[in-house]
Length: 254
Image 1: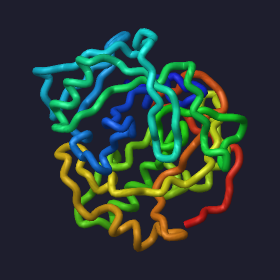
Image 2 (image 1 turned 30 degrees about the horizontal axis):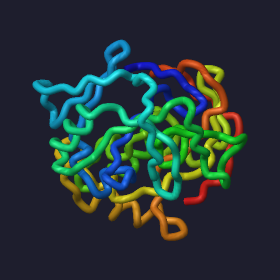
Image 3 (image 1 turned 90 degrees about the vertical axis):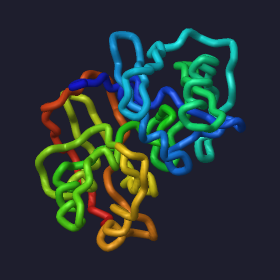
């Protein structure tokens, strides 16, 4: 897709579905790297999911499931919030692919999961994301990293929502307020990186990079940073090629 609707939770449809284990805790690539092998596509009002590059067996889900009477409290890090189960068919399909009992849940509009109060601007709510609406990374930042690596890595290792072309390496670190297509965005926190960045998103296998190299020049307070976490302050459409206008900057931490 070459465009997306910005909403008060981030990009429309982004991270509104989540897999949970038998304890209703979120499942991530940190412990289940096979998650890297799922691929998704949107066709009209349908979300299509296939596994390991095969289109032979596709799971079709409504982008906005019908309200369900079967609700559950799910756990994301230290947060608890209400979700609804999607279907037994989806549960069985994902469980078979992951060799792990799991269930698919959806976040309805009625769920108001708050952003970390230390970074929220005005009672912001978010999706099933780690905490924030959008992750911004500059292409020049990845270029800078790849010059230091023996083997270049693709941008999907870092899973950003918005990739910025142009600018200096890590310029996104300093972008406190900016606009895209008239919509306000606020950079509130650098993104600390974990072992998920070491997982090849095509194979599901993990290595040592990029964390080994990031530790040599992107370390601060015992954390490794790459990308800026951003809150959306308006609604509207953004698309590939839109200009980013920087309104206010802040000092770089790293």
